[in-house]
Length: 281
Image 1: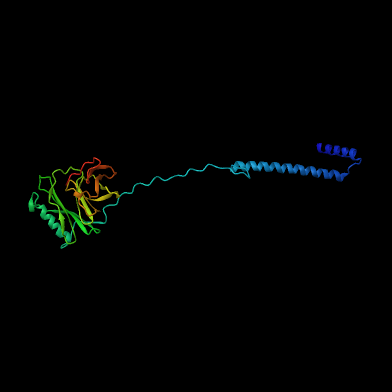
Image 2 (image 1 turned 120 degrees about the vertical axis):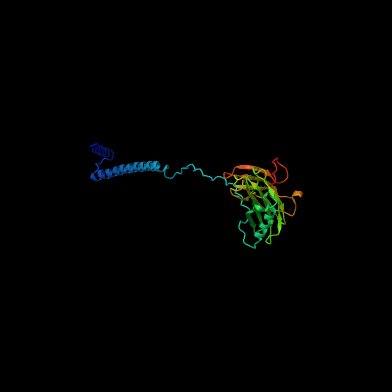
């Protein structure tokens, strides 16, 4: 009813202003214009409502860019220092075939062990031999158990070529097997050899150098339950010099357990940082 009264008032005003009375067509045309205005207003309201809903769902309004905080990048921890490789290309054994260079070398070491208590009546045992293809040499370790109640055992070792020619140490009788780490060594043509005894608690023997090269983990020789200690050996490149000349490239030895904890550290090079010298074997 309010719309009818407003239309009648508009007709009366138009008649007064124009001096004529608008007909039905004029009233219809004015009604259509009013409906179009109402429809346009409703459409605008719907557009605002949809835009507000869109902003709530996506976090932004149409035509605007919202900068979101970047997700922090997860960085990987720094790489660990690589574990040194064992002594290059070792080939081990303890059963040399008849007539081989290894069998002849063992005969040489067994003769040396006859100097130990028991003489020839106590047989020598071949603990192991280790070939280096790179240097075309093999290192051999032999030992002899004493008769009871004696507990001190004897051992010897040597470095030989493919014709069983080489150098070997005199038989050594171990008086103090409790030493955790010992060493001996020698320089040959283009390489050096280092060897010694190590506590059975050790799983690695790490050799560090004084000329900047990476450290090297040496081969551990497990002597079994019959002997109170294990052994180690390693080959490494070395210039044509001698330990007396100070050119010996080795610096320190460290015996490590399975968890990587140091059991003993001693030096095999010249004095420098106060590290005690490794006792001889």
